[in-house]
Length: 294
Image (cartoon, rainbow, N blue to C red; front, side, top):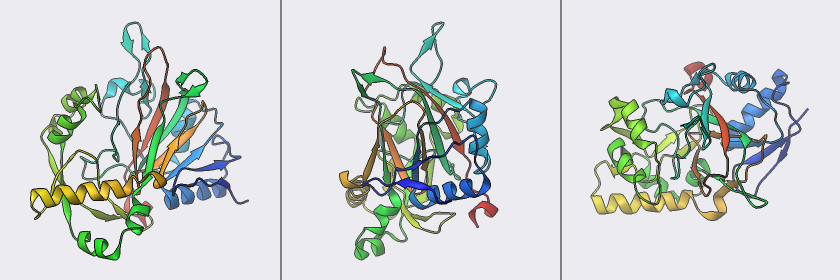
C-alpha cells in the first residue's frame, strides 16, 4: 500500500500519515526510507515510542552514532541523546540549548552522520501556542534552483570549516549556545580544527547534488579573496533559506521529525524558557556505508 503523504508548500517537511513506527512491515519501511532520501526531511505525527522502540526504528536505517556529551545520553540506552531544559535534583537531564544557527550536524567530522530523528515527549507552549519550533531548508532544492552560471562557478570550489570560528560564533548573543564550551572540552581533538569540504557534494544514496554551507563556521573558500569569499557564502546561504523554501515545524507531543544531513540544514528557534518545559529524544544515523550508499 502506498504511503499517505501530506505535502507542505516547502520542498521538504512532508508528513507521512497513518503509520505506527512500532509496527512496520519491510515494504512500508522501505517506502518511508525512500521518502526520507527523496525529500531530506519527513514528519510522522502521533507516535508513542519508548526509547528502545525509537532505537529499534532508527537502526532499520543502519548503524547509529552517539552524541559527544555522554552525560546527555541515556545511561541505559546511550544511542538516545536527551534534549531538555528540565532540571531534576539540581542537574539538567538533557542539553537545553543548541543549534540556533543554520547547520547540518557534525560538519567538523570527515564522515558527518547521515541524519537525525527527533521525537517529542514534552513541547513548550506560550498560552495555547507551541513554541520551540525547528526550521529546515533543502540544500538539494537550493542547488537545483541556482542559475547555471552559479552552478558552474561553484562546482569545484571547497570551503574551510573552522571549529574555532564556530566557538566564537555560537558564543555571540544572537545564538547563546550555552553548551559549546562543554562540547569543545569533550572533543579536545576538534578544538582548533579546520576541515575542508566541497561546496557542492553528491548525496551518497541518491546521487543528487547538494550545497554544503553552514552559517557562521566557514572561514573562507579556498583560493578566493576574503571579501569575494564572504560575499559568495552569504549569497548561497540566503538562497538556501529563502522564506518560501523553509519548512517550519510546530511541534506536538508524539511527533517524529527526521532530517538528512546531506540534503538539508536545520535551525532551532529556541524562543522559550523555563518554566516552559521541553523534552525530546534524538537518535543519530551514522554515515552510510558503501553498501548503504549503493
